[in-house]
Amino acid sequence: MSGLSHRKDVQFLEECNPALVERNAAEFKRLRNLLVQVEEPARRAETGTEWHSDGSHAFTSRLSEARQLVQHIAEGYDKAASALHAYAAALTTAKSHYANGKGSERKLAALIATKGTAITRTAQEAEPMCQWEDMRATTGFLDGLAELTMDVDDIRDEANRLHDDAGGNFQLAKTTEQEARSSCVHALKQAYELLPEFRLKGGASGVDLYAAMADMRREAAEARANPLTQLPGSGPKKDMTGPVGPDTPISPQLRDIRLRVAGLPGDAADNYWIPLVTDGQHADWISQNKEVLRAAAKNAGLPEELVAGVAWQEIGGYQPGLLDDVTGTIREQAAAPWGLSPVTPENLPWRLGGKLDETSYGPIAIQLRRGAEVLGYDPANLTDHQRTLVEEALQDPKQNAFIAAGFLAQIKAESGLADVPADQMTEAQMREIAARYNGGPYWDLPKAQGYGDRFVGNLAQAKDAMR
Image 1 (cartoon, one colour):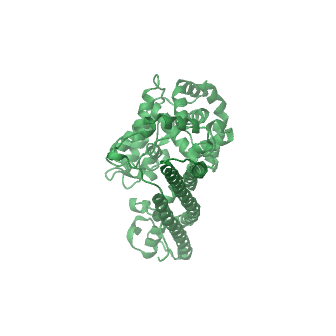
Image 2 (spheres, one colour; image 1 turned 135 degrees about the horizontal axis):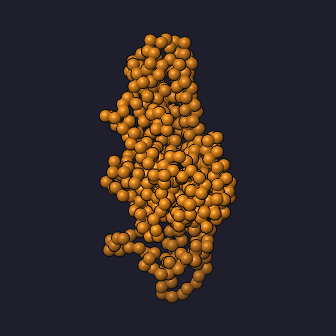
Image 3 (cartoon, helix red, strand yellow; image 1 turned 90 degrees about the vertical axis):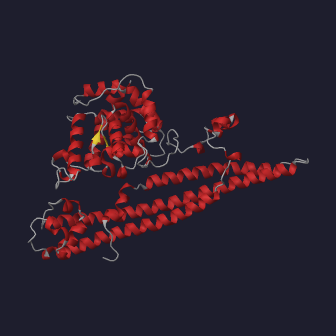
């Protein structure tokens, strides 16, 4: 077993996105370039100004201090950008190893299936590598496999090869990411040390310097035309918030969305009880909700037709919102120790099968875990109360639109389209985001591509309904 890892050791790589890391590196590089622009005028002011008076030495000293301060800050951001850029490259390599390991794992699972079928919860939840380890050792949850008396000698060599190939690739993924992360964190700490620590005299806290100084607000307004003030396509700036823990039921993002929708006029249309199956019904729904969709798109920095087009896709079909609730309830019962055991939620029949937090809710269908991410929660550690709040937010048509737009913005930021401004997005680019919305990491497969094609086919009608 030396030199091998299991999928659970590196499964977090599925949620890692090198493009998003690169985007953060670009943000640090932008700040570095912005500061470099300031450094040269500061140098000219220091060396090209002659002022003869008793206070000239203080003037020269302050100019020198300011220039050195800008220099150190620029160096810190440059170091941070380089660290994230290197980590993004390593993350790409690690994800490639992980994908190779999963490929071998799938082949191993198919081979194991020729000798038995997992029927207990433990066996169903086990990785193929662990299943084979127990099968070949005739211990553990082997009793959870059907056909226990079957001889596995005829598949042993191939199963061992696939097992070791999967484990070896998982190990490569693990070491590649771990070593890169360690180097990145070390470099980021060094970069942080280069940044000054500003303190207000008297220990004052909570002072908004930007709001308090008119000159600073004027300078900021003048600088908005400079392309270095924000990355292209980044959309409206949002305040950074820390991680939401179990003791914080309502996240800052959820509170912000609630405040925004409270200021919107009228009630939003819903399709909780009645499925929308005709183009006319789709158009009516979009038209009734156009102000909400427009506000959600603006808040996320997206074209309104992208949000409306995805909404057109998601509100269609023969499944009303009521059935989403039924699906979620049945999956909860399957996941509960006292529920439908030994059947896991993933092994339920038909469309009922799936992980608990992958249940979709709301008019613009969004998986609960994705909604939680947009709202700033950790999907893997949701409390029951937080899960209920996320579900309720997704089921409210107005909040649902803002969460859907936030998820679309997240997809855009994690793709090669991150730097495309909203007013410059092409139909082909919006089609790609729609396909990613539907297919996730498998957006280039036929099912998600078909979703993208339907998005384009209905886009003109969605635009008309928004007028």
